[in-house]
Image (cartoon, rainbow, N blue to C red; front, side, top):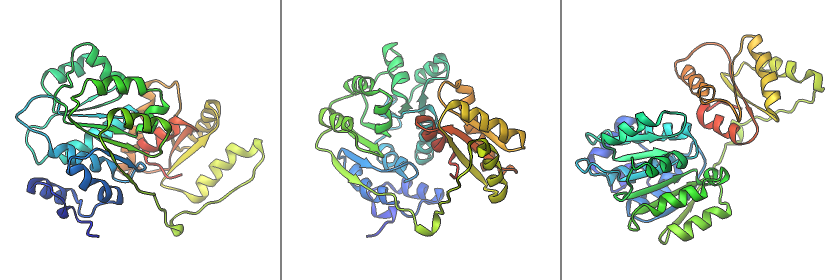
Length: 319
């Protein structure tokens, strides 16, 4: 099957923009979902982070936008601020072939006033977390009656975080005649419930992430408890990875490992629940230093669970 974007019913301007972005071949999830989404069908797509799913829903979303109609025409819900920021950046890149498309991010950890002003200036696309979007809707800062495309990105994570009721409330404020695109790494019971209540004859696509056996090497080291922290630093100094994601069982273990690594000169950050937003955003600064090619070893220390997944999304570290 031809995986070129030029096999799709995309506008010439969009195709030229994709060429400029270096997007020549579709990823498997794009190849499976884009023809359905561009045809206007509701889609449930099961795909993991890093599969190219943002373009899989971003391109159909952008194609439907009317630049001279100053109303929210697309709503994208994400589980975290960090993911919403990434999605916003990508949608802006995909939409740059069309002049004056405005994308606004609505997430916690940022003052409401600035977001309110951005909405007052007009927005074609809103990307954000369910709680903050609902907050603006309740305050009268946001209207969803012109939404053509509704996207639930990483829906399984939003359900795990208890957002079902918020999501349902927001969907009810959108027009019944709309396209709904749902992306999820797993398929918990709540996904079926969302689909039954709010989607119209959705088409389901599933793409398994396949890793080449020669790309992954697994090693196991058995050490005593009192040698654990020292062993981590020894391994990092021995293998000298460009970047590392270290998982711990508890927040205290995160703190202990962070202290040891920083004392030995590693560029390390911790990420776990109950951190202030400024500290959590430090993972983003780590990612920026990686992109800029800063020297030294870089390590993100995260507690197993939701925060570790968030660190994976934000830092793109290598385990």
